[in-house]
Image (cartoon, rainbow, N blue to C red; front, side):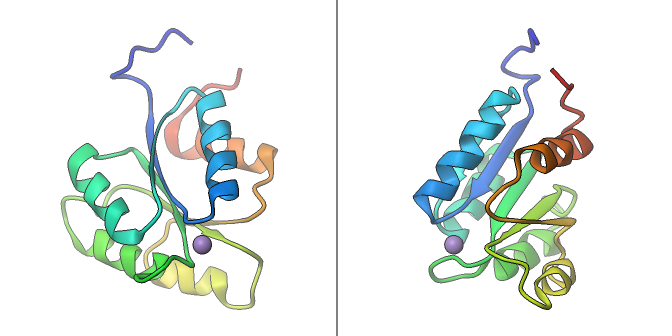
Length: 131
Ligand code: MN
């Protein structure tokens, strides 16, 4: 795509499961994104403050602070409220979508990630070009 490092979309993935994290990173890198990773909510919030990613993929079940709590915190801060957050949930549990949206998530995506749907989601939020 010939994008420079500064132009590449930056995506933060907050995910404590190493297999899920690896898959998300691989898909994002294949789409030309710069990827930041965190395995806890607080680590993720710290990276948001320091790096201002264009998009956040937020696992819900995390050790300690949940993805819902982290999302509420980021959406309550005017400095980070505009960054889209996509909730990653392990399964389509009843009410998960509603809870994610109520916490302030912009969208919700079930795991395991479906490659086609995941790419479509990236294109919606980042304008990443189809390759
Ligand atoms: Mn998890």
